[in-house]
Image (cartoon, rainbow, N blue to C red; front, side, top):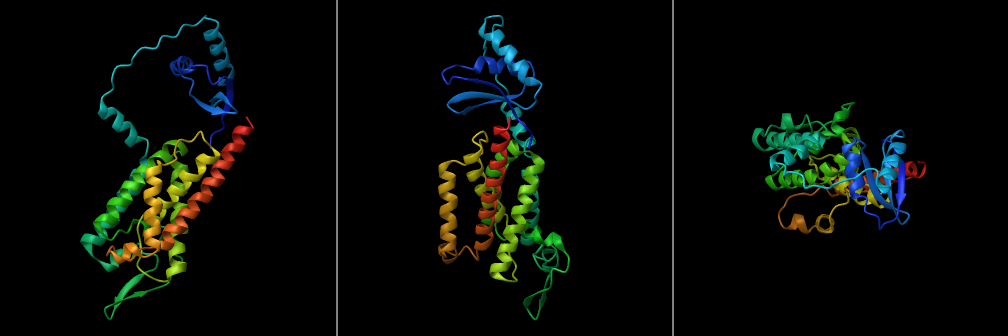
Length: 286
């Protein structure tokens, strides 16, 4: 994660919007957060600290006048394009999930599905027979791309986009990819350890891991605006509880990989704790 430097700390009553506009015009990226009962302006480069302070003094002394004018409306298409471009990892995971769903739903080939399942699988005497992992370590991840129904793929892609794009825009592409891979391994291994050999899959474990990360990390690092809305938290935690007590299976939604959900959620929360604490220490050291 990139280091940040504190350039200014002013009263909460002071309007820093004009200064923020000026800094953007001068090519000085920054962030303004509330900290220690003040507005704290932070930059990502140490050599920008003095430049920000000089502009601030010039602005307060009247040497620099800042006029705020309404910017021309940007086409909605351009705004949507920017969102898509800022989340390539999230989009890649969604695309691979759709490909896995197509493989299961349309190809209906056990041989092809067996390439992505946690353990190799074949059919003998009309029953599934599972082999050994035998160094095929990609299988620790690839079950997340297998989806077994329309609702399964639709909801997972929806929540992956909602949570993943926010985290990716804040954490960066590489960190988001590593975060998802670690959660995938933990959630898949959790399901295997709990349920034994079986044909399971889905992005739900990763989705719950991202939920745990987005829930915990901002508590330690409030500068990360990734915490889900209360309604999303309530729905997803409520759904998890319904799955755990067996209501969802009773209603006919099929077998639920509860261990993957719980394992992913706990893993994501722990990673949020680590990342958030590390970022907080980094801010304290600047």
